[in-house]
Amino acid sequence: MQATCLPPLVFYVGFLLFIQLNPSLGFMPATPPARLRSPAGGLRCQVKPDEQYLIVPSQLEGTGGGWTIQATRPPPKQGTVWARPRPEVGEVQEMGFGSFGRIYLATDLKTGQEVAVKAERDIGQKVSALRAEAETLIHLQGGPGIADVYWVGKRDLNGENCNILVMELLGPDMEDLLELMDKRSVSTKTGLMLAHQMLDCLSHIHSRGIIHRDIKPENFLMGVKERANKVYLIDYGLSDFFQDEQGNHVPCKKSKDSLRGTLRYASIPKHEGYEQSRRDDLEELMYVLIYLMRGGLPWCKEEAQTFDGLEKQQWARARQMDRVKNLKKNTPMAELCAGLPSVIPQLLQYSRSLSFEDEPDYDGMKQQVLDAMSELGHEMDFCYDWGNKAPPPKRNRFW
Image (cartoon, rainbow, N blue to C red; front, side, top):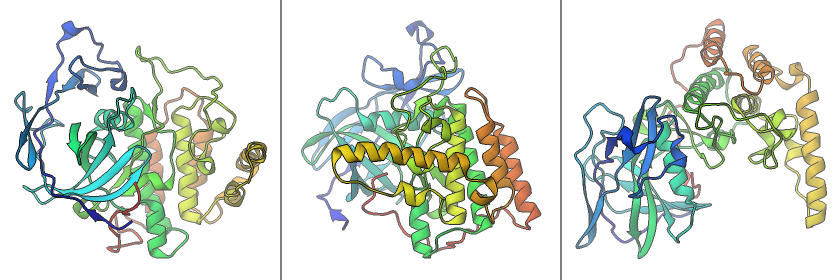
């Protein structure tokens, strides 16, 4: 999509402000943030197990051609996760659109840093997809592979009241990079370096009580500029908490919507209709790594088939899912991982061996990856196959 230059729109964005909640309010620190609302409409989030903060909505004042956001409370002390420079965002350009709105490329007028501005029309919906994503990202802030959030709130955009999320601009996803290199696969070294960072990211989001539930190459993006060697995990639209408010693991049971997500990378328990947990994210990650390092999976052709007619679609889709599941269960490990270092089938077998509530040994898995790199004579130097050729983010992809 051609980037469209919009009329100048200036945001003078104040600090995201946090205050520690008064215990007298009666909120338990372990309560998942996405299930909380403040009377003033702010978002409460748990930054650490023993801390809970409130994002205070700023007051809006019109100032000629733009908007000035006046802070209602002083900023937090430097060094906390939310003590960020105030972005003053200048003219914005549309980059793309997606399931819940549009995304714009903008520039912080003070620092010159490019940022992403996500906008969703506020039509009085009870559940805002953008607001939910913001809550999840805020809950995960400060961890590896998590995009920085600069501001979230409501603003007028081109005459429409919108939910707004200002966040770190990210680069190409894994599929973009394969296309850029005109290759079907990445090298062993690049694959293992990606594996280490991806495992680190899953370890972090799981430590915050969240499972992603839609691990796929399109949801792993590289950073830009000085963060171009960093891997990010995006799109938390299907994510969920795997613990309840008391910290108990959700029960293992059949779920009607268990196979939401991407069929190609779905875990075997997901195929069988079970509620998902940490093990499913890991199994899906291993299929992603095999896909990237081998250039495909044995069930790709089966999974890619399409069907005409509603009844035929429903019947054929069920058969298709069964065939893909059987290929995942019955393809010999030696065939599935042919040509790959032994650490890949070992980690896949490990992920499949986990029970529903098991906490994976993330440090052990990451060490296995580092050991494999050392044995093969590789270093974690972040020199990927694509080198300095990484393109800017896709203009028609809404992430």
